[in-house]
Image 1: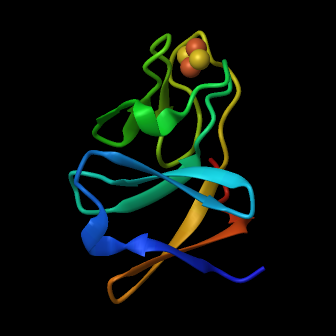
Image 2 (image 1 turned 90 degrees about the horizontal axis):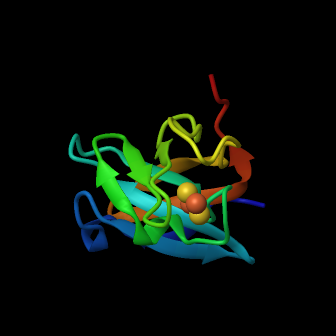
Length: 109
Ligand code: FES
């Protein structure tokens, strides 16, 4: 699959997550306070909660349900109760378009 447009860069609000979906794969897209765009799997690994309803703090996205914060760079949870990472997707910015290929996961360190 090739990268698909999910939204316009100008539609993203800094430090707010936006839920997008490509072929049934839900993602949380975030424009962080440094101006960098991230995309991680939208479903918390602790429960069936949409992470895009959570809170941004720097380069983390915190699940509102029980407080696990996930790194927007690695997908790893930084605190319990979640202990499994969410996938991190490579984002391509093309002009004002935000593109994501759901098959391309960023390597996590
Ligand atoms: S459902 Fe996300 S931390 Fe519990």
